[in-house]
Amino acid sequence: MAQFELILPKMGESVAEATVTNWLKNVGDVIDAEESVVEVATDKVDSEVPSPVSGTLVKILVDVNGVAEVGSPIAIIEVEGEGNGSTATAAPEVATEPEIAAVEIEAQVAATAAAISTPETSGPIAKNSNGRFYSPLVRSMAKEEGIGQSELDQIPGSGKEGRVTKKDIIAYLEKGRIASTPSAANHAPAASPAPAAISAVAPTSTPAPKPAAPAVKIGAGDEIIEMDRMRKLIADHMVNSVHTSPHVTSFVEADMTKVVLWRNRVKGEFQKKHGEKITFTPIIMEAIIKAIQDFPMINVSIDGTNIIKHSNINVGMAAALPSGNLIVPVVKNADRLSLLGITKSVNDLANRARNNQLKPDEISGGTYTLTNVGTFGNVMGTPIINQPQVAIMAAGAIVKKPAVVETPEGDVIAVRHKMFLSHSYDHRVVDGALGGMFVKRVAEYLESWDLNREI
Image (tube, rainbow, N blue to C red; front, top):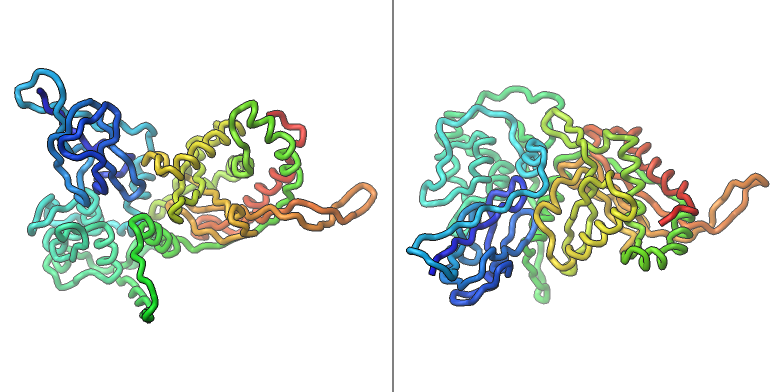
């Protein structure tokens, strides 16, 4: 018999560790090749890790709620074959979608309050210190913030066995650095004026005090429900986005009559021919893609005082989960897809999102996001930007309304299918003119839909 180390695979760019949430197999269980063994969770998505070999699970190396680094062994599987007690190791999974390093660092680090450049600390942050383990992400954040080893050791940890998490680092920075600690006193630079155009996520030398949450009075019959892990992440992400970007929202009412008539006419044949249901989401997404090509400065991110203009158009689509939580899978390189290709991608991602089968890379790398609030009967919304993007669009419900229609014979009142488009954008880089023209252009593409378009 030989022993095989089950390695925690690479789970997307910038993901350095994962938490074991559930072992699907127990010690002594027989495992088939490609059968899922364990469920893990990252800051981006929950995933299952399959075994690349068949054998018997003989040892679990990371318990439930334990944290494992990417590339480290999490279990031992005994496999058939000659062996002398040594272990074979599976290579970590290679990322399937290359990303721009600067953008991915912004997504991981800046989304958790990236720092203004500070001098390096007196020495590297140790992996283990003061009886605690520090993950690669925590060590990276500490280095970026100029937090020394002694200062890091004093930060209260909320993780397992008192480990410091990224949330602990964020909370520590929001409350203000401990100026009296040796590390902070010795290494903190003299306060200097921040550049006028500095990123809103970067802390200043005198951070504004965080307002205290109002006290909640709990009645005798009230039920206390603790947020699940995903809801906590969503809450943090939304609060961070509002603190990062000055939001402005522009509205346009689009006449969807041609789109509705065309879809009603072709949807049966479309499904029969292609095996796919065509909804309004891919149609709206196609119009957004065309508008981004007309106004490429919507397809950007902010890195400090630099603007990253993305070459790819990767459109995220907000999807509601059965649990009530929200996830945003991404249609990569959407500008290279036909309407059929967009439809297939949208349907596939939506189905796998509902079944918790998305891969980490499929919810990262977005450059623009669409959310369809009309699914819930809402006529419009004011969506919050999905950082580190700078804009998001909400499509409302399509409603029949009387409207004035211009004809060669004069104006007439007719029943039309109308839909509100709500465009929220980051006013640091997107002014009202650009934000307003963009959403207007999306509406124009929808209103000029070709009723004779082939499927």
